[in-house]
Length: 112
Image: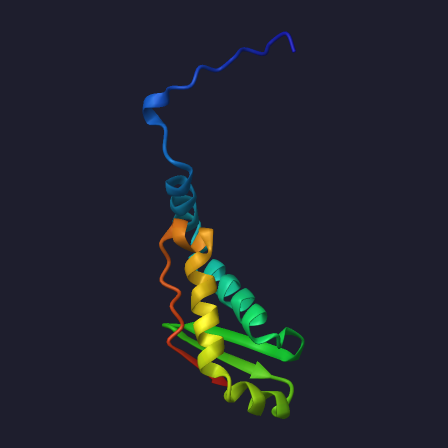
């Protein structure tokens, strides 16, 4: 503790937290993983089918979901518009998505 010297911070170089976080995500190439995670969480919440979801793939606004149950696939096919709308609302409200400026608008959902 004897060698401890307080560091004086220069406030003229202060950066808002949102900008620093966005810069860190871009610098470490974390954006695609972060987007996939947020889209997957939105799918689980909007569809309620997380337990029966085997795989998820998201690219260019298209979410492809592989389900373990053909009966569930048929039921969800009838609800796709509502699920997509709920997912887009959740993603628009997500603070991390907003902060980093990601485009995560779901244009289409394909069920397999």
